[in-house]
Image 1: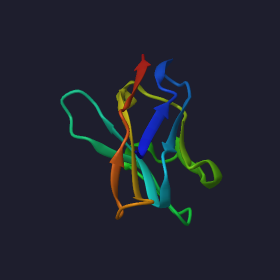
Image 2: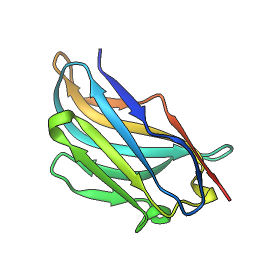
Image 3: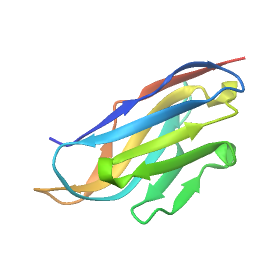
Image 4: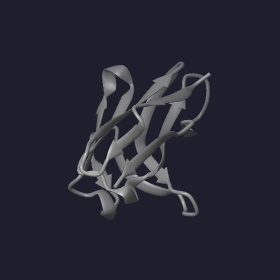
Length: 120
């Protein structure tokens, strides 16, 4: 069974940094793209950053210049380095991957979410 396993969330003061990790577990044929989304209480889930298989990246406007997405293809892992954190960054962060399992067609997968809380 293919799963996304997230880690790295926690509590940090404003101006601080955190790094989130998301590892793919299970048998997969290929990964097309991976991304991080976040959802704050009472708000819709929004794209934070995405990265394609070729390494192209895109970012939400609110995190440009502060967050960096990267991947380790050998480990099937994507990272989100978050710097200059603000209280508005407080949310549950979800890992998303569009990938093809070894026995099925490509589809989207979601992680369980990891809480990031930024105190002022």
